[in-house]
Structure formats: C-alpha cells, structure tokens
Amino acid sequence: MSKKQLSAGDTVESRCTKCRTIMNHTIVAMVSGQPGRVQCNTCKGTHNYRKPAAEKTAKALAAPRKMTARKVDPDPATWEALALNDQTGHAATYSFQGIYKLEEIVNHPLFGLGQVTRLVPPNKVEILFRDGRKLLRCS
Ligand SMILES: [Zn+2]
Picture (tube, rainbow, N blue to C red):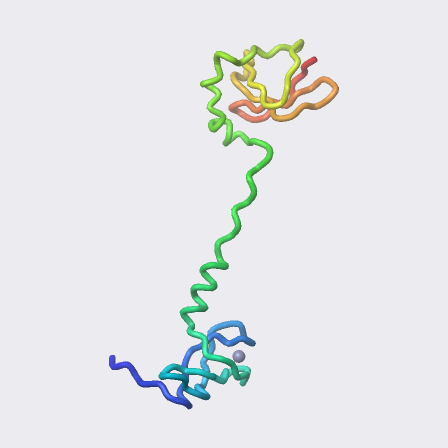
C-alpha cells in the first residue's frame, strides 16, 4: 500500500472537538504536509486536526478505574494477610473477662486466632476470625 499524499479536500479521520469522538473530516488546510484545519463531516465544525492515535492514548489514560480505597474493615479474605500465626505466642486466650483493644490478637478456643476489628461498648467486641467476623462478649 503506497501512502497517499494528503491534500486539502481529502477526508481524514480526526478527533472532533464537538462530537468528542473520531469522525471523518475534510481537510480544510494543510500545514507542513500534515492536515492543519479540518472540517467535521458530521457536525460541520472546523477545528485543528487531531490525530486519532492521540485520542486513543487519551482514552487509555482516562480508562483505568481508580483503585478503590483500601477497605477500612478487614474482611475474611484479609484474615490470611494478618499472618496471625506469627502472633501465636503473643495472642491472649479469649475470655469473657478479657479487656480488648483494637487490633489486638486473640486466640479463641473455638474459632482460633483472630484480630479485634471493632469495639462495641459497653461489653462486646468484634473479632475477625478465619471464618468471618464474630461479635463476642467481653468485659
Ligand atoms: Zn463533529
């Protein structure tokens, strides 16, 4: 395919500032071998030529969704990430008489290792265990 030399009056694809998408445009004026001013075949608006490739790049940059903010509350999936096994030696055995603070690691006789995720006054505590969060009594 031989590259066709563009000239005024030819049709090129360009990003249209009004249509906000790639449209066929008629070249109005050439500037140093490149389309300078173009007229949109759709809305008839005249504007500077914009390479469709530039549009693609702009879209690619705009496209990625922003990462959702890190969850404040850990969910069961993050239990693994807590690496609680490292804490086994430090974990206090859970008891009704215990007084717990946020992020404290506890070892529950039934549920295993967990981390305090929420304090619920006056006498409850929410702990994230391997199989989910549980609301337990404490002092
Ligand atoms: Zn247009």
